[in-house]
Length: 257
Image (cartoon, rainbow, N blue to C red):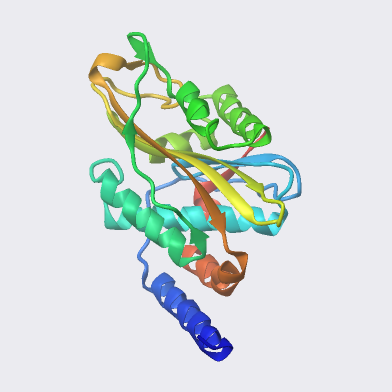
């Protein structure tokens, strides 16, 4: 393949991605208030993004953080529109992955496995960290823990709690993601993500800290390392922002860590 052929292929891929984004329909769950401005400076930070919690190490700049937040929100809302995130979870995750790939993320295939725990009851916050420890650096684990603890410290009626809980689960079904983002030695954005979905017999309140009954809960989990091709994303960034409109301010809010 000549350099001219490569250039033509790259332009076609960008055009296809823009057409894909334009064709997306996004879910619009009802939310009743707007968050304060996001902290996008180069320091450790975290945010609730609909049914995800995303934590950042101090290596990412504001643009990179914004790109991660917008792309992951787009993927969630588009998947929500296509498939019920609690009832049709496998299809939901397939579409979630495809949206991320279209906008520039490199997403290796992933598969879910049943979470096995000891004891009669368990909480998911510990399972999240155990899952991420297999793929994340100490710094990434540290910000993920800090984000989870920050959420735990908030009152039940805090907007960030309501935002995450209302998107992450219904009464007895759930689907949520916890991610830690850093940068590689080549300044490439890398996201280490834990993905979970479950069914249980008891009404769930705050999902990460709820005491699940082991005998009547089925919890599936998966982990993966995703990287962002920023050259590709730069070509679709404005289209993503336009497609989201005011949904970014509705469904993303800072966590203080």
